[in-house]
Image (cartoon, rainbow, N blue to C red):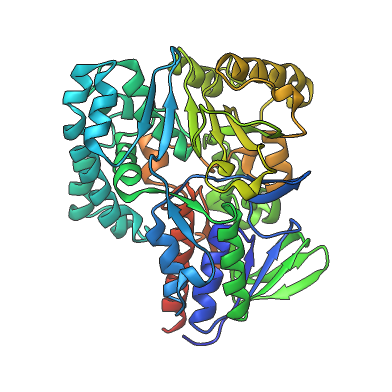
Length: 494
């Protein structure tokens, strides 16, 4: 490619992926990151001898991360090491019934059969459907950008859409195979991986059953943040300039074309700007409305943000036999959780609680005999209906009490405890209304026709991240970064 000057806003997975690919292809790349460290929503937090990952902790689709390194001419293992988790995740239901998600289908059927012999009989058929959905998505939706009408509206794409049944809800598809509420919740939870409700999101997300059980769930040596550290190291080796603690104030344009950026510390000229941040926030905060007619404020408000999360980091001088590396505690009424989040816009009365205990796999991440617990409760995006500043103490007490009832007692005696709310996410990362995954996938439109990776109004402005194609989730955002970089390089060769 001809040498291009590219400036990237944000050093999350998408921004780092774009930077590495573009630098490898000969571009001059600078990343501007407003936080003190790379990683976006994923940050390493060290408190009193405990190491935590605040942000994504479930790593799937390792081939996407591996490609970031291999396309740069290096081996991933020289920068970061992953290890396969088996079982993948422990699922604990309201009456104490436990299912350890496993690649071993015989074991899966045995566990499901203990509470529903009928559901166990249909597990193989569901997994076959899950694999077919993954193959269709991987071939048609994930591996290419959808920049032009002909990319979306052609016979091949129409056939693919018909095969994945975009108007069928995930829960509806699951009910074709399963009857028991435990099985429906266990696989319905995959909608939350893209910040959505299993009762509203399209059935294509059933593909995550195949992704987890067959392709694997992975830990990262040293904690998930080590993946960011490895990518940052590679980016710097490729000549990428990373400036942290610097905030972009304005995207500069002239006659509808990118000219550069203005930050709180200076100005940068650029041929191309890639925004690795929430598309909606970028438009609202960095581009005057008159310069973005296709993405005006009225249209921005029509998008439904994804769910957010309320995080507690707890380091405690004890261990818990009930916990694996990943453990999920489901409530009695799973549907009520999403009614609370998306309809009432309040923190759930009885939320699903996800715990990542990375010290289970790597004891060095906590003191001897202690536990480093990342505790996540799904939460609504920021609105006037729920104010965390007012509600946090009582809600935190409720969650600690609930965990004690579930067999995780004494958290009130933790050595260290830290909280992170949707309002904190919005403040630190400028995520639109504090959403974790950008926009939700609660409609077919928001799932399959997301905001474009390429600005319709400003030539040379590109987007990577959860709001744009191909969607949310750590590996998918990483993939979006690579796809955008390769398209920019292709256009630069013309």
